[in-house]
Image (cartoon, rainbow, N blue to C red; front, side, top):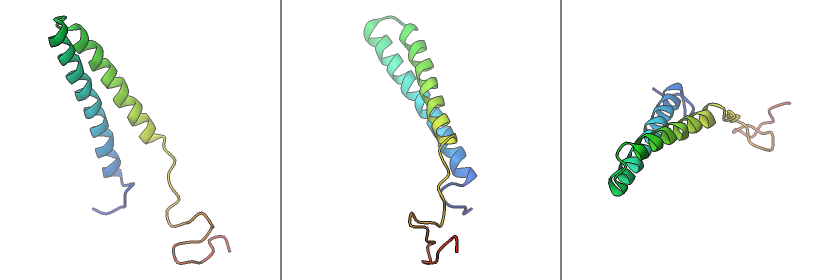
Length: 86
């Protein structure tokens, strides 16, 4: 497949896994608290929504992250040692 670490497939996989992980953790915490306290659907609903919000926040951060300048170092040189703007 190729494309480096910022490929479209890699980003889609990360977005999907962030959403699933947030919701799954929220469901797990909510289910555990419901079993422990006896309030059956209350904590499950609340923490599922919080997990969804956390997943969306992570997706928002991934999508809006700055794209790194591939091939350039901080001193203005490329990976081969030549000046980029010369």
